[in-house]
Amino acid sequence: MEKATSIQHIYDLLIKMNHQLEQHQQRESMSILAEIHEHFDGIAALNITDVHVIDCIGRHEPINVTTLAERIELSKGTVSKVSTKLLKEGWIRRTQLNDNKKEIYFRLTPLGKKLFLVHERLHAKVQRQLFEYLSRYSSEELDVLKRLLSDGIGFMEAVERQDKRLESKDM
Image (cartoon, rainbow, N blue to C red):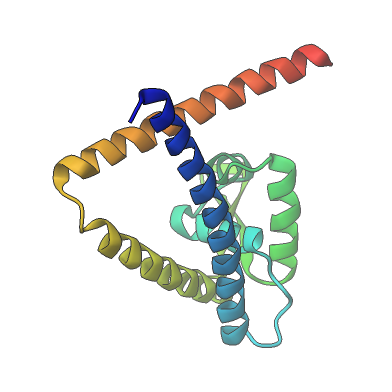
């Protein structure tokens, strides 16, 4: 197969895979939210962003707004809005460190810890499925896949930086 034809075929496969990933992520998000609502019947509705904020706090507590925003790649404004909702609903609590009374940090409440564990269990299931799927490939094939994915992430980050530069010039 000619190189240009191979590249076009790879592009077509990536578009198809991206579409399938979007559909899978939507189904997975709905599944996670459905299971969470089963465990927390009668509690105010959460969306997947709320769950991911709780997950990040659970993994890195105590954590402040700035670090939380960086880790989940959301704006500080969005994190502040979500954290205000989660505080009000009793999923998280505010704390201060003994050596820094100025900075506000978040920790999970017992209810938040329970949600964190449910979410972690669901992600572990998905991870097991992916590991099982990838185990059919040789170490050499996995190395090529790692390189492809790493290079692809770098490519997409470069495109994003370029788009941001173009947007700032247009303003």
